[in-house]
Length: 186
Image (cartoon, rainbow, N blue to C red; front, top):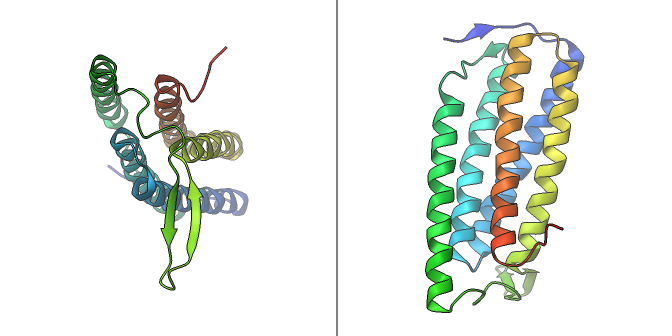
């Protein structure tokens, strides 16, 4: 069930910012999914991009004065996240047992070539992970500000739900990096 809300000018402006952040995350995740060497990382980027599309849809609903129901969404997402983490752990164990851990991920360079044939963006899987982890940290913090500025408890609840998912995106990237020796948590 969708409820209606009237947003203040400040709330609308903050949500427009969140919309822009979500659009940028989608663009980056989609591009990085195509550039990543490691298939596990490609999957993480693709899954995160899909969730960002859902966030964008939710933000658009809020901007249209509609509060979407978040019932069941976090439980379903949590189950999917756990399943993905179990799969990632299994993949890591298989790589370790076959002696392939670390192959092709640490310093692999990616190139995108534009239509003129010139070399463009270059980044390793690690570089892309660092960029997306930093992006997720930033986006999560901007949700914090927006949440505090919203007068409607229902809107705050929706934004809290999105923020928690943003944190899960960062967690998935961190876990991947940590498992590959790209990030040392000391």
